Length: 178
Image (cartoon, rainbow, N blue to C red; front, side, top):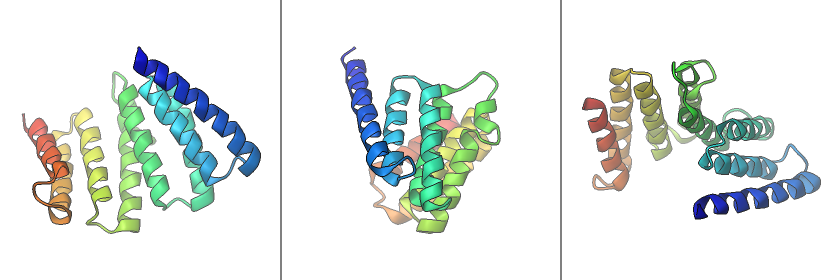
C-alpha cells in the first residue's frame, strides 16, 4: 500500500512537470519526451499498462521526431515498450508476436543499438536478452536459447566473467533448458 501511494505521488509530480515542460519547451522536445517516459514507467509499475503504452508511444513519437529513428534514446524507449507489452500480456500471444508487439520492439532496439554501439556492447546484450524473453513467451525455446547465448557471448567478452549480468544470463539459459 505504501509503495502504491509513492507511485501515485510520483505520477502527480511527473504530470505537473509535464505541464511545465510543455509550456516552456513545447510538446516536441527531448525533455518533454523524457517526462512522458517517466509517467509511462510509473503507470507500468502501477499495472496501468494501457496508459503506460500510450505514454511510451508518445515518447517514441517525440524522440523519433527529435533524434531520428536510430538513436540510443529511441532504443531504450522501444525496450520499455516491449517490456510493458510483455507485462500486459494476452492469452494468445498476439501482443508479443505481432508487428508492433514486444518481440518487434526488442528487435528494433537491437538494430539501433548495434548501429550506434557496435555488436559487442552490453546494451546489445540486453536487447538479445529481451528478445530471448519474448521468444520464450511465444514458446520458441530454441530461439530464446540462441538469443540468450548470444547475450552471454557478448557479456563474457565485455565484462568480467564473474559479473552479475553474466550470472543472470546463465540463469536465463538455465530457465529455458528446464
